[in-house]
Image (cartoon, rainbow, N blue to C red):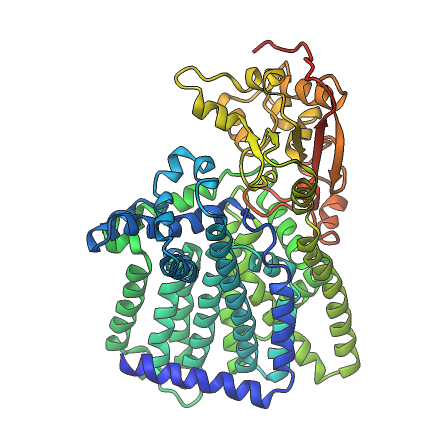
Length: 626
């Protein structure tokens, strides 16, 4: 184990230094990755970009708060068990929160963390949002996002190293640049989640597996098992590591000069490999350390069930996969990736390290596609683990083409680099010009101190909430109403008694004005209606009273007028959640700001924000029925 730790880490450090010294282009490739992945990574802070980002960070803050409230080893176990099971993500986010906790300790404000406690999941965030210093939210989210960017750059370097080990330096360079220009990869580098850390360790598994095939170094193989266990602790779909390492063990036996019997009959190595991998998984899941393996078993069972039937549009799995890859890669890179796969299949009969690497990449890619093909809904972040694999297959194909025709090879590279740069660059610019951030800046500049604003979307990722404003929301009204809270429609139509200075309408409010919602048209059961409502769909109702309320606001019946508008005006729910035509599907590979579904980041269309300002006494639309 000493060889796995000190020896390999020393060799890895030397390898990175040698690569930076001997390859004059690597520094520029990593600089490109840093610029694109780090561009405006602080977008939206101190608000959250996604639901997962919110809870992952708050879990770390609540764990610190629990220990501060009850110092001692006995507080660690309840602090861990109170969180949503997120595996090794808790460790990473605790590392990100550490600088903020140190500042709080030095300045005597450590007690502020006590406000972040496990009850946040049940009683909501509203009362804690204004009761805790903003710098804690800002600093924690800033460092967590920064850590994600650093790991994303590490993913680019590992892709480069894989390409070099697979074929040559050109392959490594091309693969690293292609990954840096992959829009789906850049999206995930701009949020806090388990996806980028899982990708980092999965790429490490690929690299160490390939090195074992080439060298037979047992320490390298055991290190790969540890990396695989850590990857699984971040994300269960990284369980492909087990198959990849098993495949590497077998492929080693067919290397020239290797005795197949000696390579395959290594029981001591297999036992140690299982122990290293299992140990990394157990340590990587703090919940398992605190409560035993039952937590992990429940998460494995729950993870599979959550992945099925979460679709918004009713569409086959191939539609979701094609849509995700088109949006994540862009149309030209999508076509190139298909070509890379086709070219790779023809190399499988060879006996070379490149062929072995190709087998690993194709098996990994095939396993993910097989798993995702059984899901009802595939989000973009699910596909992240496959983006570097596609980049490597395409880069290897381009590098081989160089031996036949350099002119054609560099022409294809130029087309891919230019088109992908434009696609990813336009996508990246979104972060500097988000409508929601622009709305927050406008409110901070134009709204009086302690002004009241009413919102109808109370999740932090669905609207903008300047901290210096008083916020009216239905969620807050229910929390303060006692045992007899009003219905949502009753509360909305009682606007004249609240009379806020401003009202904020978002994309998700305006969709209620449409008539093509599949939930409204479908005569499904209550569960379908509830599921659709949870995802932001208008409720199926013969009397769309929320639409009436929004329409009354826009027509001035409550004496409110439009004060400011941010983002492109969306269509009033034509068909955003139904399966579209092939042409509409292809458009997702041309426009990086396409509409997302589920818990992914919202882009320009979904960030549309309309600010209404009261121009007189509050009126009444006469729509008061519940």
